[in-house]
Image 1 (cartoon, rainbow, N blue to C red):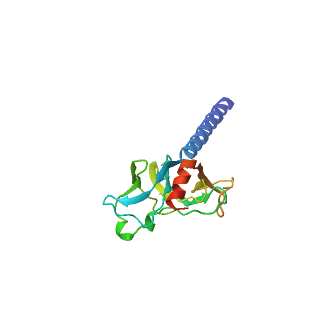
Image 2: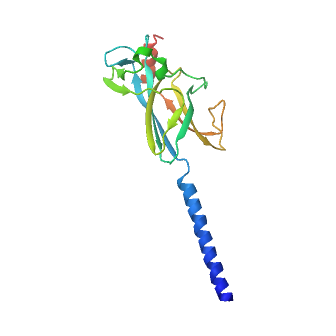
Image 3: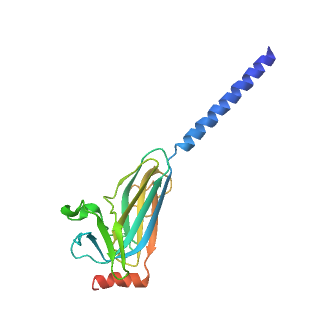
Length: 198
């Protein structure tokens, strides 16, 4: 009888350990996992449609920023408070959002053009400064930054709580964030200044 109880207790212990392992494995596989890459991709002189209609008047040369977000988790993950800051003063900079263009152009495809460099790219502008990256999905969007100095910061918060403070945030500081500090070359900065006739 004692031998039978010993075997029974041992089997119960093994089953409990396996259950605990499976629980941890499930928790690990269902965790929120996100990979965001922010790239500076050169200068843009103007944005226009395929029919050469300018997206908005009085355009000046700006910095072209591409954001690629990969969500490998089984849950949708929200992003919010996309902010563009001056690298020296941390002043908020203007950026390009789809809602800022003329309503009659909002459904048209746009091109980002730099005639000096001879580059033309499809422009997939950021709709607003928040959104959702779908589960097991990929999202790519672009924006234009109009810097005030040679250095600017792109910062994106995501809906994942963290203990680490976001050094750039004025509010909601304890959310995971992805940021990139971009320092323009002298040549790029001079092109921006020249377009503003400074």
